[in-house]
Image 1 (spheres, one colour):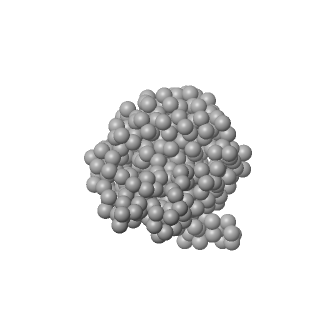
Image 2 (cartoon, rainbow, N blue to C red; image 1 turned 30 degrees about the vertical axis):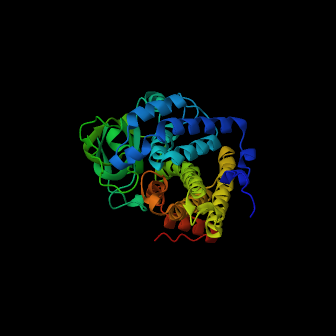
Image 3 (cartoon, rainbow, N blue to C red; image 1 turned 60 degrees about the vertical axis):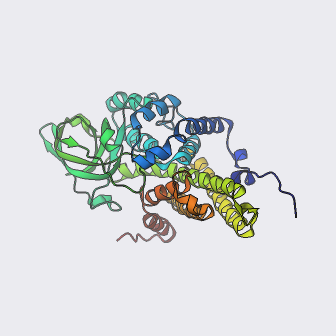
Length: 393
């Protein structure tokens, strides 16, 4: 029988570090250490309890320079998009809920203000959000309108110089702990975005509980009952659905990398378990069926990583197209959840406990699969790019 050789990590087979610049690797490694020190020891307990110390984590993540890290100015780190993607990968290797906290803060709430806001709005909110001293959320999805945001019922009407908002948003990450909400509403002049301080009378954000996924994350409903805002609350540079969709593309980009972090953690966990677990007096890792599973999963993880890095370069060059973001989100999340499920089979009964991360990741990825655009929506985005025909209706 051949003697065992020293194992290597799955992505080392692809030597992907050669494709990552030194600054980006440094940021990745910094976030990885943070996850190892602050997230991994606690996240199983947070998940089981259905809670997250989000405010404390936001301040630590702000000190780390992760919040809105790919934005320029206003206290943001100004890193490359690839560095942001790699940070998302490390955060989601800890838990999808942690990456969601960062993604909603930076790619949705902060990006909306940075891209579409007035200078006054930027000065007021971005430095605090970047430091984690304030938390933001993003109100687009409604109870009856997820994949079809154009049908939203939330309404903003003029009343003198003010705006008055009425409506309901659903499945809003960070909602009940947010200091500011970016809310999208129908007006007489298309869909518009509004910067809504959450202490405004008429605003409430009841938390959604009894979740089986993203339990280490704050998920809320937003209720706007005649919320009166000054005229200056509107995002001046966003008119129509292109405004919120531009933000969603930023968040989807982070998911392209982030989902691979969950998959990588599952695969590394399964390899370690298989090497230590004895079956019929031999390591589980020594069986052909186990190695075939590990080889297939490593192949899909590596292909997803190569795709993510390529899309990261396109984003850094401002050359990426929405359909390419859809390619990345569709492929990488779909493969990540398949990897998580397959890894669970290697762990057997042990795989259903919180002692190991694989079932937690698999449950979280059920949410990642459908938020920021379902797989079906991304298939139709790609289909439209290929055929020139829109098939959404």
